[in-house]
Length: 270
Image (cartoon, rainbow, N blue to C red):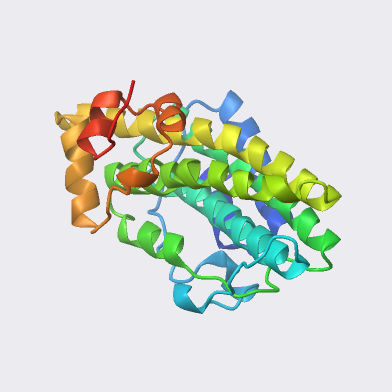
């Protein structure tokens, strides 16, 4: 297997089955190949892989979700989460593909994350089909792709911004969405959606934990204090802490300390 060439193919492909096949093969390959040949550098991805599947618009032009008793609102919700998962697949593949000096364990971690995200996406796409919809039926934004592009030169910035900021923000939001759906769970579809979101939430904790682990590894390599380095990076990218929305317990499970959460603006943490 030409490891990096295959990851490049998976990253640039818009076909979920191609991505899944290559990610699975790459994980198997790493089990018996402790060293990887690298004869070239990672290509810069100018457009997200989903650009052939979806209409990309500014965030303010995305459809409003509305009342979850209506299928249109449920479609908008499921489509938006499916888009996050599709984006997360590419982010995880890119983490393994782009930062080639990182240890083998790092590459295994992010390919396993990609494997999870593929499963999440397929689960949500199946729910869209139940609504007689599909991924690409609604417009999407490319915010995660843009921030991945901006962090393409630095593994530590990527680990800080994608898993520790954006994915951790997902841990804050997911339980609130589930709570809003609870009053509609007599609808069998909503019941299935809640189950899917609960599974995604638990597995996303592990994904953020992996990002936290490698962010701290890179901070140690740089000889810098992780919490201050994180603040420097999110300030560089003009990212707000969003402390009022923090899911303290979820973030603690994912590797954040109470000291850091308080420094980021949380009112309390025990």
